[in-house]
Length: 164
Image (cartoon, rainbow, N blue to C red; front, side):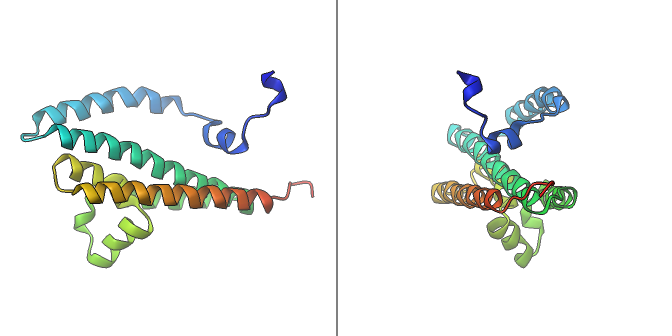
């Protein structure tokens, strides 16, 4: 019965190839996060809970970015440059967004939500975010996911095969 139903193209594009090295490095990263969490004073249960929620929210934003990139690949049949731009933008989140000056900080927080993805979980852990801010990040990520899925559908409508 499974052979009768084909795999969703979006699911196949997102999960078609997985790097085994990501799974190998995941364990040490989680152990390091737990070790650091135990060393930080004044961490509350609410902070840890918000942190975990915002990490899952960050994964949702990352998935949305991946959908946008593979949609561009469907339309343009070129993926290398889009991936490099994506990696560079994500690289901006490796340092706290508070370091950037105001126009750049607002850009990477609200337009390209790298700040939400990378800095907000830690801020929630330390108790620097309000509940309304945490809630609004979920709203922003759901909007981004909705827009990226609609862009995926648009890309599929514009798709032309290599032979046509």
